[in-house]
Amino acid sequence: MPETAKPTVTLKDVAEASGVSVATASRALAGRGDLTRGTRERVADAARSLGYEKSVATRGRPTTLDPRLIEFVLGSFDDAWTDAMTTGAREAAFRLGFDLVLTLDRPDPSDDWPTRVATRRPSGVVIGIIRPTARQLDEIRGLRIPIVLLDPMSDPEGELASVGTTDWQGGYDAGVHLANCAVDRFAVVTGVPRYRFGRAREDGFRAAIAEHRPDADVLHIDSQWTDAPLSADLMKLVTDKRPIGVFACNDEMALAVYRAAARAGKRIPDEVSVVGFNDEPRAATARPPLTSVHQPLRDMATRAIELTQELRRHDEPAHERVELPCTLVVRGSTRPR
Image 1 (cartoon, one colour):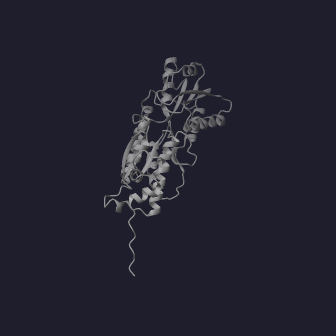
Image 2 (cartoon, helix red, strand yellow):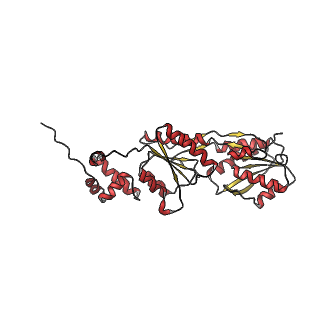
Image 3 (cartoon, one colour):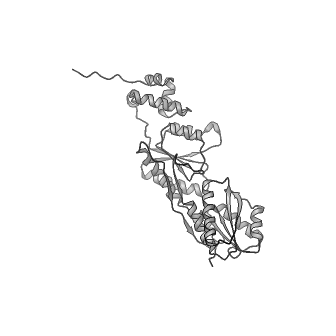
């Protein structure tokens, strides 16, 4: 007995089953439009249960399920950190056969980056150092696109995969190094807000000083992560006659310590020893060259791109945190005993 042909499931069938209009169903399946996560999931579930095949319904138009794009979302593209990250991400994406789309996190709520991502529906999304809101993450999750956080500001606590560096160990190594310099007191300069990586770096530094110089106190100075000012607290820090070892949680703040020392007439490293974090290009060209903890930024971005593709191959991926080791680069801003 001949087999009865299965009726073709149309987009109208999917729309009726999910309780939305045909236009909304089309936008949801194409990843377009500013739709809620619930609507996208309801339409996708209806399409799966009905066996809807987009390629049949669209009369042979090419599928857009995998456009071979990876989205790299950043808050800015104008500093050494983002330059290194973008280079690593671009090289990894091209090696894997993908194009890389650079997406800016704009402050305008009407031009939210998840809507732009939904329009392109890429093969993966890497979110670099910005703090996505719960609503933004829900919208991307609703698209069922792999998400990787790159050096996140807060701990994702296993909800999302993330890539970073060994921040605590980097702070610890900086502390061990300064503990062996000819200084009598110590300070840590960290940024506000107190992001996850800043807390880890300070904790590692304090652990090293407590272990190697248990009689010494560690002063705490708040600063800004970017455009670090020459504050009254920094000036007060370096004006004491006793030599001091300062660990700054990024190179921007370390260079602010340089400016404070110069204004106070203090010599680096004779009277003020300074260690930064990131090892951006300015560290090597400072006078004297800045001792800094080197982050493998390009390798971190490469690993994040690779991880988006590994997540695509698993139905229930483990949301792991990948940490690449950082290394202390000793230069002229410190002088061991």
